[in-house]
Amino acid sequence: MKTYSSAHPSMSRLLAASALVLIGSMLGGCSAIDRLKNIGEQPALAEIDNPTTRPGYKPVQMPMPPTQIASYSPNSLWRSGSRAFFKDQRAHIVGDILTVTVNFTDKANIANETQRSRTNKEDSGVDNFFGKSKLPLLNTALPTRIFTGDSTSNSDGKGSVQRSEALQTNVAAVVTQVLPNGNLVVEGKQEIRVNFEIRELIVAGIVRPEDIQSDNTIDSSKIAQARIAYGGRGQITDVQQPRYGQQVLDVLLPF
Image 1 (cartoon, one colour):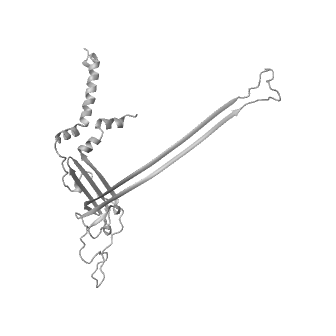
Image 2 (tube, rainbow, N blue to C red):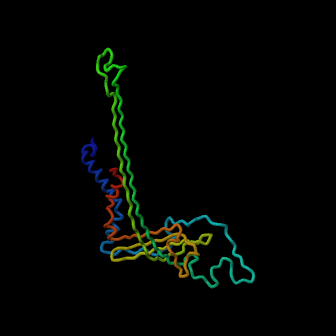
Image 3 (tube, rainbow, N blue to C red):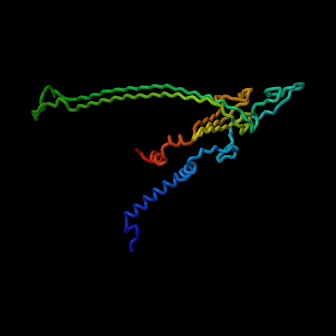
């Protein structure tokens, strides 16, 4: 008895093609379902949560100097290492908030050109054989050209880069960790919804308490290991992105 697939090879190919379509649909199924649920609705703002409880969160570990014990001088109102006589209102413990002034300006203008040219010519021959213009015995004329070779190569390469980027804004960040040397690990996230588009600003890094200004602000240029991300999500961003099928083909196709 013949199986169904052997009796109908075209049907087997149809089933295989259907399976591929089903797999492709499953890859983008979750995203498509979420988008269908949000038709006509504004993008939802993310919930405020504890950054340290997010999946994959790892405390920052950096090389630390030896711990110094605070010392007090006799008959002095000041403690060694203290920044002020009165209470310091700047962020210094986990949970404190400070304002990060993001001031990023980047410009680049680079132009390079390389030119290379080379011409080679090889020519060899015999026009005289011991004073004779003909080969002995054969009585034939001598070959004037035995080997001739020519080669020419040219290369001209040009490259240029013109870039101008600027980002100026403020974002409040939370101290998530205090390192053994007193440096603060901060992270801040800001979301702004305009109609059906959400703009996100994320700032994270390590700051020195000494770099925090008296008004509890710090410039982004003084943040070590800075991670600054500015983007968005919503209808406009979705239209600007290629469809997931096209993205898969861009990765898989070698041409």
